[in-house]
Image (cartoon, rainbow, N blue to C red; front, side, top):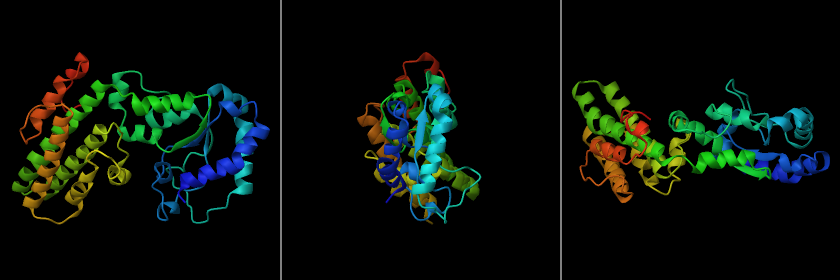
Length: 309
């Protein structure tokens, strides 16, 4: 059973009754669930990932006012229940990067910890410059209960309300970086005899391609450790994961690598055309980045450098 499933079973079987009996006045104001850093929050935990920073538990998200009034007592009750009802995980080790967030957490603190903001983004700068993996961490997992709706409201805004102009700006930046790194600089670095630079060029191509595919799916790419696992699950262009992974892991002749790059670019271009984000047919992706830029309505965003974002 995955960590998030175990957490939900424990919440419904043990914690929910405690909250109802001892914190009835707070019951409809607590958001309960699991989200944040850690493989279990993404649903990717397995025997390997449980060797560190793993423990069954949930997060109790409170407003600042409720945390001030109830937080200490609620945390003590939570800790006591964990000790009495959950098995000790002897194999689990804590890293200096910190374990999954369990127990009482202020709503604003949770979002600030992951995105730098105690709330949802409110302007294009906050949307554009917050790392995509940060948004992925802030919105993964599952909310088991949230009658008040404050936590879920921020979560849903991040998940569903990214301004289209910002998404277009990010898409343009990813497209031109794919052209520069994969279609142009990879082969040139090899001709210069710079094998390390060529490998970095492929890495840049893959990273930008993965980010672009997530954006085309209206999703945020997680940090590198889980990029490919999450990519394989996407309905649109998720099948390109195999070619992108092969670019990084397979020992292949330069010609085969270039063919894989062009295959990925061709599939991306096909999708961009189907979404009417470009009308061109040039297999080289660079001009399509400028086509996408033309579709941005905001003058401020449209005037940014094409690679920014």
